[in-house]
Length: 377
Image (cartoon, rainbow, N blue to C red):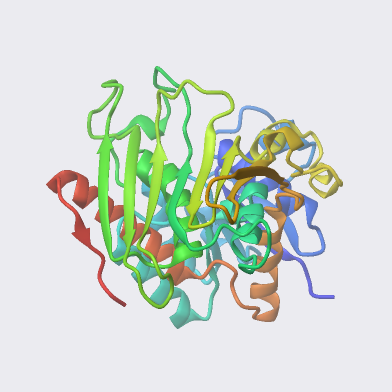
């Protein structure tokens, strides 16, 4: 068995304590939580010991982390505007890197990090964990059905994906500040764009509407967006396809809409969001991640499929269950295998770079009030 990877988590806020530390602790065969970056711990042992009862080394500065020869993997869960600088410094110091989305503020920065990692023979990995949401796994399974299956939607003509919420005020965090990679399009938009690219590839054009809808805080920090990704008909799909990606900050709905997928033979409708984040916020033991019920979506949130019958008049409705549990742990297992065994990355850095490219194009479209072309690669 390979030696576990000595890991340092930068940041012990929501990201570090919810999305990273629990998985590093839950997978001791792959990782050792060697240390964390916590600049001002208020208690002996810091926040990790408070939350999980585990004592780890606490570094007070990034320089200390980079100078620690025992650290092999650095996980960056700090504010968005630090991602590029911290990842570049970690790679330069010979560390593998897992970085939260958005990975950078610009496409050029992402390309630079990818080139640096390649030149040093290091792994750089984007934390696009929503690829392992239970409902996204269910959707992929549905779209992979052969046309002869009674649940098949036919050729997809419209894909609508939402992360809506109702929030009247600001939360008073760094996310409210007008810094590089700030705003909801970089934040939640990175997830929605990544999922769309996974399903359909690069679009030909983008039309976006991005705004500070509530008119609170800095007007440059967007809190709502609607992005249209336009796909022409061709060899990949016989009909034109529009992917509509939306996050609305004043959406009164419970549960919120998640997916509406329209095909030539049926429609898939899904409400509610993956349960893993809520579970991770309250677990007291990382071992809960390995329990059977972790990541299982309740059946009342399962999607439905409406199908047009052969008479082109009758519509029948059936459930489409999210039977596969959400599994963010799979991202970490793949990361560990990539570092120790050279396995192929499930989230390739070029894909993460494309996400940032689409975010930049969306901002450009919104600023210019025009549809913009996506460069062919």
